[in-house]
Length: 90
View (cartoon, rainbow, N blue to C red):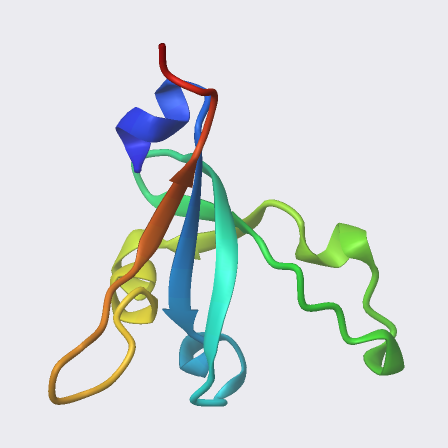
């Protein structure tokens, strides 16, 4: 993911939302940055009824250890999925 970000590409990652809201739902988020301690996500799910806005779900800092748990979906045979979106290669 870090290499993709450095190339200007965008990782889209399947996560389990358990770590965010205690719901065991698969969910796609984009990774917008990483540093030593955190993975920063943009989350497209905005709960308008709870008063959330787009700004509330941009650049969310997630501890790398927590992200490791989030990025595996399922218990017995954890599923990990990522799509890297970026400029067309020649």
